[in-house]
Each structure stands twice: as C-alpha cells, then as structure tokens.
Image (cartoon, rainbow, N blue to C red; front, side):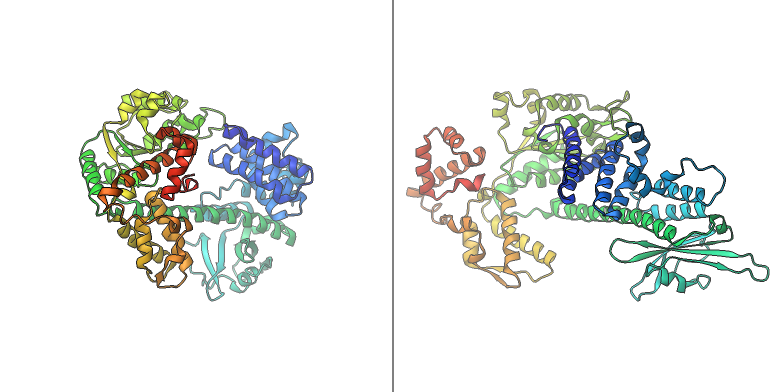
Length: 596
C-alpha cells in the first residue's frame, strides 16, 4: 500500500477494500480504499480498472442494503461488464438482477413484453452523464427511440412550485416555457411529487388514440424531476406497470445526479480558475520596497527576451506570481501552464509532459495532449524544479535542446515554441555538486536568474500586504474590512516570517475568521508563535551593538529554513555544535518547530 507505483497502490486499495468487506467490516470502512481506487482510475482514464472497482462497490452497497448507491456504481461498471463475465469475478448474479438489461440474454428478438424493456434499459446505460451539456437532450432521444414517443419533455419545479419545462424534444416551434396548453400539467405536477402515471387519451374525431407516461426521476435530495412521454406509437411498450416506471426513474435519477455533479465540477473549476487568474495576475502584485522593485525591473528585461528564467527564493515568497508577471509582460499568445514538479510521479512524467497516443500502454483509451503542447506559443512554469528526479531531467533536457515532442506511442514529431520558467527554493549549484541535479540542465535553465526577496527583506511591504489580504477576505466573507490595532501591526512587523507572504496570508485569514464581526483585530487573536517572537524594531537601528546580532539571527533562520527545522543538519550548515546552536536559539527566542 505504501509503494511508489500509484497504479499498484490503486489496485491494492481495491483488493484491501474487498477483503475488509468480505471480513465483515462496516461499509464505510471498506468503502474508503475503494473510493480512492475509483478516483485514481477515473483521473488516469483507465475505464476497465475503474469499472472493476465500481462493481466491487456496487456489490458492497447491495449487501449493506444501500440499493440506490449500488445502482449508481453498477451503472458505472456496466460498460466493461462483459470483460468480467469469463473471469467469474466482479460481476455477480445479484448485479444482474439489479440491472434488468442483463436479463434479456435468452429472450427471443420478437417484440415481447420483456424485450422492449431490455432495449430500454440498455439504451440508458449507453448514455454518458459526464457530457453534462448534451446529456439531457440525449436522454430524451433515448426515451423517444425506446418507447416510440413522439413528444418527450423534462420538468422540474420553479420557485412558485409550478412545473417548469427544462428540456424538450420535438417542440422546436415554441419556446420551452412549461406553460404549453397541450400538456396536461396536472399530471406533471403529480409526477413531480413522486407518483408515476400512465394514461390513454381516447381518439377523437379525426384523431388517433395517444398514450402518456409520466415517470418521476429522483434527484437524490428528496425532490423529483418529471419525465413526460407521449405519442400514438407509445403502445408498442405494452402496459408498463408501476414498478417498471419507478425503476426506470431510479435509473435516470442516478444518471442525472452524475450529470449534475459533472456540471457542478465544471462550474467550480471555472470559478476557481477565474479567481486564480484574477488573484494570480501580475496586476495583483503588491509592493513598495526597493528590493521588490529591483526584481521586477529584472523581470521586465527577462520578459522581453525568449530565454529561460530560473526564479530562486524561499518558500512562500511569490515565485509563481513573478512567473505570471513575466508571462504577461512577454506578450506571448499562448497560455501559462503551471506544473508542480514535486507532485509529479516518475512513471507519469513522459505521458504528462509529452502526451500519449491511444493504445500506447494499458489503459491509454484515448489520445492525451502533453503539457508542452498545451503551452505552445506560451509559457510553461516548472515549480520546485529541484525536486525533479534525475531520470526525468534527461527527457526535459532533450526537449529544451531541440524544442520537439513525440507523444508516447506516437511516431510524429511536433515542434513547440515554449518559454520555460523554472523555480526552486533549493541551492541548485549545491545540488549539482552533490550530483542531485544535472549540470547541463542547470545551465540550460539558468539564462536569467531572479532572486525573489524574503518578506523580511521587503521593508514597508508587510502593511501593504496586510491591507490587501484583509480586503480580500472581507469580500469573501461579505463583511466590512476590519482594522489591525497598532499593537498587532507592530508585532507583524517584528515577526521574521519564515513562511513569507504565504504565512502572512494564512495568518490574516485565521485572524479575520476569529474576529467575527469585530471592527478591530487586536493582539489576543495573534498566533502564539508571533506573540512569543521578540521585538526587532530597535535591532536594526542599533548599529554599534545590534547589527551583528541581526545578521547572526538571519543566518540562524536561514539555516533552519534550509534544514526544515532539523537541528543536527542546521548545526552542520553553521559549523557549530548542537549545544552551541541551542544556546543561540534560546538567546534569540527562535523555536525550531516553527520550521518543520
């Protein structure tokens, strides 16, 4: 379970969840590893493996009496169920009973009362709710084709509790307002309360007999959609009974919930990207210090060229913001693609960076475009480049040298025009000496070098950033902008900020939440580590006795940051004993745990 191969970990999670459930563990306990397995296979686009996990989840939920959840996972497992049948595993007889589409295997092809039901449920299982925009209309076409309906509509309830048509088929002449006089809305309203209905309208003068079905579709939150189907040929469905109508509604309910979840994910992603674009834009850089102005002047020079840029600086100083600044100033027409190298698995590097063709490896069910193709005519930002494995560094170097990518499993080479910006909080020159980073790659990246100053070195910027973050969080919370008391401002100026701007932002977010509706944020709301921090305001002014102390303290802080609070490593970096380091830490009031 702790191996480095994520694919094997996902398979192990499936096996572990199955074993826990077979051993009698509670459903929730056994579900957790199975849900992790399902999420991995879904993200990596490995449908056969995802369907196996969903089949195990469906069986577990069915055994626990959770039929709606079992139905949901069984529908997800359906596309690959035929692969499981020869193995005698995953797809059980209980799941066959749950999905009526399997029960038609031995039924003759003529239009019996059961065969059309089989066709109906099979057509439902071919729908893809992940295509959330087209799914409702495709679902209506599926109903029209399976039942022989000439008119199919989907309703929900408006704010006044009245039926409202959301989608319609064969109603192109009039807008879908839900007020069509030709529709028996009293039936639709009853269906929206969860009652399935079937009705035959007798033929009038010159009119053929028509039939109506109203199927309630549960949304999972105690409410219903109403699926209305009508037509002269609807009689080919025989006499659908109430259990059939309820079951078909449950099927659609599962599919519509998955569709709504997919739509919500898209909306949330769009909202996050819009917020990130607004907050991450170069326009949102806040500074007045000379140190930051110098860095951005150098960034302007780098932006005008197409050369690679290496951005150095401590964690949390805003290296990504500087990369965005360079990209926006460069005028490149393509996008900025941001990649955190520390989060990238070794075995996924080739596929993620260069892309892959369909069938390139097991589970590659479709073509995938790599990061460098996505960033064509734009910029790619490689954050934490120092964490990149040596094996992957070779592939990256080759790409940077010739500017060409070949997808995994492909034969065609594509030329890409990409500006590369890398960032690190490590000393890459030292990593080269330790043979942890390739020297040739270091020189390829290190054309322009920008060193982003720490927050301690940005004289006067702390108060500007505080005001910016307070406005931001007040807007999010929908409240007035609070003020910081003078004591709080003095404490914030005195604190060394080992986590830099990111730590300052998190601190202010915590304080504004704790302040409630208060107009002034006072010292008791400060974190204890800031309250313990000694005052520094006089140290910089006392040149005679204090300047060396300030420099000594900064050296100690730098060593602790580089060693991440490891006292043995910090003492080795400083060339002193651990006991001597303890003395210095006590003298300056530094807590090593704050750097871990």
